[in-house]
Amino acid sequence: MSAARPLTALRAIAVAATLPLLLTACGYGSEAKKEDDKSANTAADAGKKLSASEVRIGYFPNLTHATALVGLQEGLIEKELSGTKIKPQSFNAGPSEIEALNGGSLDIGFIGPSPSINGYVKSKGSNLRIISGSASGGVKLVVNPDKIKTLDDLKGKKIATPQKGNTQDVAFLNWISEKGWKVDPESGKGDVSVVRTDNKVTPDAFKQGSIDGAWVPEPTASKLVSDGGSVLLDETSLWPDKKFVITNIIVSQKFLKEHPDVVEAVLRGTVKTNEWIHANQDKAKASANARLATEGGKPLDPKVIDPAWPSIAITDDPLASTLKTQSEWAVKAKLIEEPDLTGIYDLTLLNKVLKAAGKPEVSDAGLGAK
Image (tube, rainbow, N blue to C red; front, top):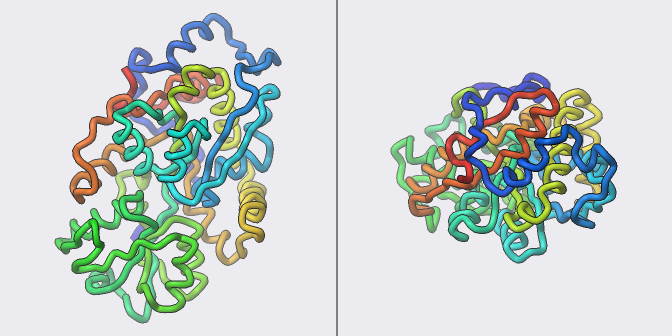
């Protein structure tokens, strides 16, 4: 099992994409870009008021959403918005965030790859675009060491995932399949019992012995460790280059079309937030914890946040090829039909922001809007 790479070791993750984005493969953001290319100064740079009075931004109270937590807590995103107000909204599950985006009560959201795929496919490509990455890694298999000592010991045990068809559920089902074991994806019954359990409930279920372990994101994984669990597998070790998308930034296509200047300003804020996180690790960890305290009423215990924080890699790169892989896993598990993901990405504005900041562009792995 490979150790997770610390955030500081991944300062340059956003430059690791191997394929440059073709600027001809773009969507609404590119239409706005044609006008903006004539001037190096954006509306925000010139101090001009942007086209929307507010922007509604959704995120989860998870450390894997550190860009949102820190960017909001430190005012780094708001600073780029030239008076446009941020209306933050916290969600506990991807489907509810997608529902808010579809219903018009959310403009931009931080969310995992599986809800992004599901939302895009169910709307037949009409409701969202992925416009940036945000985080990689931060997912672990934590088990009761008295019951499970090796990976083979998982057979016959009860292992929790956050939700049927969510990012961790799909990854675990794929891992089970590669072991040659059988599990019904709908019921979770089989050689391993996959128990879909809300992350808020999982620690209590673990302490009570109703589950033997869990394949979960941070900080839930480290909470289980603090309750006597043992990390049996870090999902990072299963991926080439030790990288896989865990959090994207998505936008309503309607909002992107009507307010590309606001979307660009938010992306400037997230890119600068990520720079600040990499340069100020301890301060960033404290800032994220302060935001979590605002959300949940109390901060994470140091024995939880200290091991959790370095296992998450903050990145602007959406790691698009890994989203494609996760989609293939969901198809293999028969949770979704073969999707057409062409157009799920529009990285035009992100690449514009990265170029202005002197950073290399990132790739959409051939899944950009035409």
